[in-house]
Length: 322
Image (cartoon, rainbow, N blue to C red; front, side, top):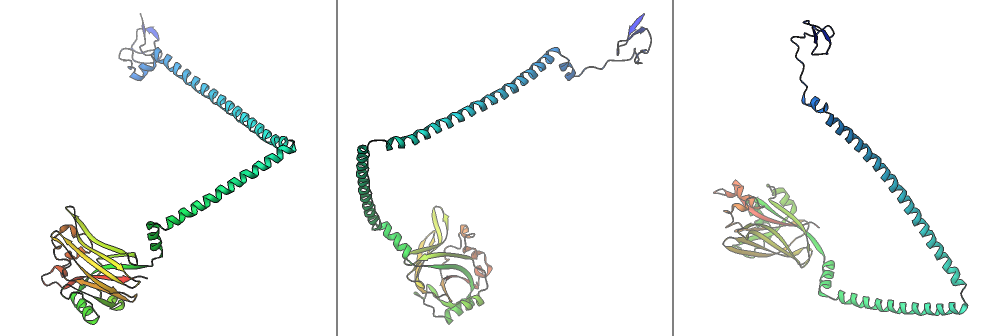
């Protein structure tokens, strides 16, 4: 009796092992094909693969043919364009020769006509020039132009406004040793000190410093404010320089309860410092948390200033930088 090997298909008399591949015929279990093998062994899949390869090859061949055709068409268009341009140039070169061969009478008539056209053109240009000049004169006399011209001619000065935390001892010395000029003795003190005295005696870093160019007879504002429920609270300083070293300053304090202001005149030289100490400049603002991070109101975090027996004051310093 012949049996077939389940592995290689060899036919032999019944035996435990295959005489061809040596596998145990009785215990051998054929390995099951996985999904990929089943798929690729399918005749339909193989046919589809051949079709895909054929379509891909056809696509690349057609694309190359289209590219070649487009290049040929582009080359023909360029050649036609060049031919058209050359013919136009030839036509333009022929026209002057034909005109030169025309009768003398026609040439003279053309010259007279050209001369008349030139005369009209000159008249139009002259009229346009006069019109532009008149418009320029009117524009120069307009209020906006006049204001701009004045702003350009007006001299300017660079001023520097700073806030410092100053000890009361130093502030008292400044008031005593300088010619302080308080407009209202009970409201504030203001005066000039020598720059060297200021540099030697100041002990704290600036709480706020801002520099700007101020035009003579123009308002320049320095704001230290925050928005609380739609209302700006804090300090606003307005400086008006009447000359290169003199002017006035108005400081306005706005709180939730209202506003008040002080005003004083100042004369500053490059070697001096103008200081202002408004005694009640912070009253009504100390309980506004929104101002704690707005310079110079970080002074509210100072123990020397907020202590029961405070030893420092907030002082504004104004300097000229030119």
